Image (tube, rainbow, N blue to C red; front, top):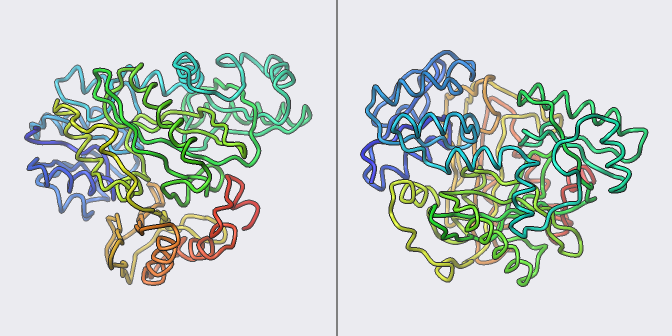
Length: 444
């Protein structure tokens, strides 16, 4: 096992990694920007190194500073968490070349899955169903329009290097296609440094269902069942649950086996998530693969009673993957609400100082957060300030527990999305499990 791990991240995920390391007897090194000096992840780590000013590009995205911190602290490995450098193949390669174990997949797999059109081609070769679309990136709007006509409208144009819902535009006809195409290219260039785009058939009102997978890098793969991620706004997830209410046991089996086959074919190492769109007939289509731990990993942990962060660390340290598929069982139902520092009506970020903070407790209730009373939510980073996760023996119990926990959750001094989550949990369509990616647009 590692002696010391540097966490190249901040906030709740940095704190989550620190806790997993401590339980395995691993020392931890936090990195922080100068405005994060009073953050909980800094206080909880065994050591901490300042890596630059507030702006992400000068601190949490500053590879030179992070590598220097790892050298100074004499770390064995680096855990990137999610976001920032977690899916940056150059960073993973630098870690590999510098003698630090990157706690995640190889730079080769990050690069392969980071380009969405290349990932689609790879998955198709492994027998994973894919949405009909262009064969790789599209050269220009003229070629794109011809492809869109052959597929049939509506279509979705996606940034090839994209993720997190950025660089995506839907075109319902020829008239709207040209504008959507150029907007997707511009967003891709601005957000990811590449204006390459590809085109897919747009499946109207699908479910967004993802499969949590792990591989040992030697051909063994496992799945940890699915997460339902359809409650989202502008492709940004708001609430996740596991298992999904929208797929049958047979579809669950097929999705799991298909995903494991891809992991085995890739000889993939560590954690990953294969994301699918599922139509009303339970046909599922590959969308993308995230080569990291996900924000919503706690619902899988609660549903299966398995610590995924510790599993990441054990695999990265070279321990054999002793779990077998039959060891992984669904033992209940879990729901996660992402609590963002945002106006629940306009979704505008709401940074500021928290003047009162009470987190819920009780049986089957978990809060992953780096906030505290008096903590200042900064305008420089993502607006998510907490994840509230509950577990119940069934979905009905999980919903009741989440409603109770949301009532207990108090954040004063700033606006949060807690009121929005209360409305979602009370909605008749959510209670019935009648959801899709259009849920928020349709009902709210």
